[in-house]
Image: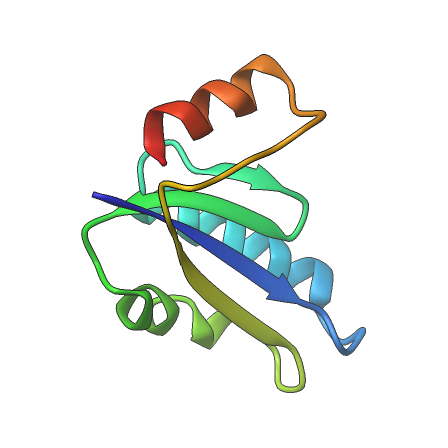
Length: 92
């Protein structure tokens, strides 16, 4: 399985809080133990980034954006708590 970064980019004010909540609910329903940081989620999946994106785009309001990036094994971070750090160590 690969780790992916999903980022919701709010460009309009129309329904952005609703979109964020809907995305969070969909992501939590589709992938086990996602890690969320505001408008960014980390997931683990066997799917492609295209497939992940396609499962979420209907929830993104016109004018806003969504990006899905596969994470590689080369990663670094600072200032995260033990739960977040453990997730990264286990999944990337």
